[in-house]
Length: 621
Ligand SMILES: [Zn+2]
Ligand SMILES: [Zn+2]
Image (cartoon, rainbow, N blue to C red; front, side, top):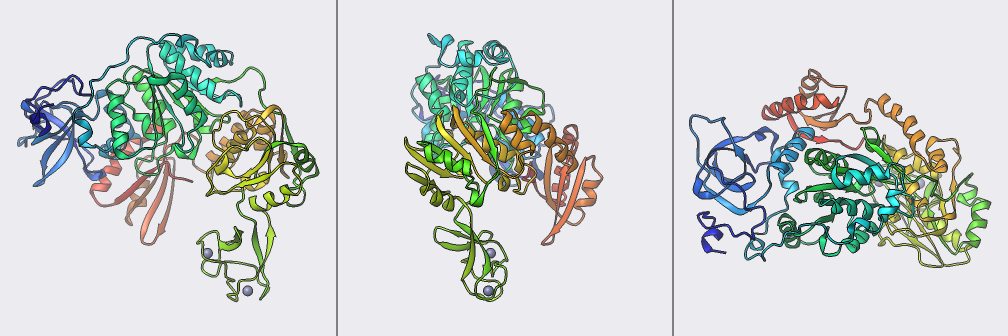
């Protein structure tokens, strides 16, 4: 490594070890993307690129912009040359941030999510740690097919699934969109089998998991099966993440397993993007461009001729509405599901009997705490938070408002003595202790999630349901199913069903799943009983369309000035809802997919004119 290269003077030769570096050098007029995440400035600018810089597509450079020096990325040569053209001042890094292929994905995302290209690049490429670029070990890109992978663990499992052979064939040499519903015991082996098939075809694979801690059993199984060929790209500090990214770009791995940002992993010869538990909330980025990994996976697979696999015990409507091939077990691998009425505090006689004889079980209770305050014992008024009139909940021995978290104080008289109706996970733990013949524990929201021990009954809510692999429990009780179905939000019912399937997957095939509900005919409950979500999907899709937000229709939440509703109303759209909050106009807009480019162009103009201040794609509804 020469000091000249270190200072950014690119007359120095780029060592062959440099990742993403041995690429074509450009010179003359180039279009660049300035590193400013503003829609109003979201367009290419033309600069003159001196040949001596050794820069090209994806190079991070410094350019003069309105009298200041700012960072920018080189996008490529351009014929759009203005009369007066400034020169790129210097090369900031010899590492190329992206290539043409990645840029095509970023551009598509920028258009789809109406987000500045600079914002998309900022999400896709990890923050640079300059010292990591120095003195890197020479890369040894992995080539050829490793021994024995054609018959790797898991291939027989997915090969026996309906449409499994077609999936394996596409993984070796083809492309396409697949939705896989693994059997409850097969979740990890199906993923391993898919990755193995892609690698056997001489290709690479990205596997996306929703969380890093605890490491999902599926991620661990892949790391195990592929050894040095695989890398975990999850968690870690800034330096470790940048180092791993550089290693991936240098071709050191065939398999990348990671959370959201791994969807951009700079792997060549991509054969597979696999999204594990595709409906999980963590697969969506809450920051701009607020993308969902599921959609980006499909975009990228489409651009690079790879296979996308969305995997879930119960796939989301968003996964199943676009064209895809469904892959699932030929038989029914699920434990039978019994539906009964809840009984007092959720203690139905049948659940009590099952709990008494179970040695390893999980009780899913979606409501936290020990109970809710119903009435003030001092003044007799209905209980409500003195600060915000919110619901008051008893949890871990103290009463607090569920909305503002203020200590519980009566809204009418200010006193703190309430009559409490007992319900929630803490209360379930208490009564289950009196019934079970093994120890009972509660995994609360702040406890680290874990699987039940041998000889233990575990009580927990949504946060407890992580991928711990196939657990084979005697009994899974799904309590308070009606509370899950009543949650607000257009996706609430689907979320409830996905959660139930994840809980039911912990039961062994000849174990028991008991669901307590007063609405046994609800399509969500019936989907769990039948082990098939199709009928639920068919009943749910019209509700979403009726609400004005059909599945697959891009939705945007736009914030701006008083003329916003009028301006957006003039654009082609499907649904437009408007409200004024604290002086700002907020519009919810649903579009047909083909209306998005025109909408995005108009939004960028409105942003430049000050009418639009903020855009969020796919907001929570
Ligand atoms: Zn409150
Ligand atoms: Zn009172």
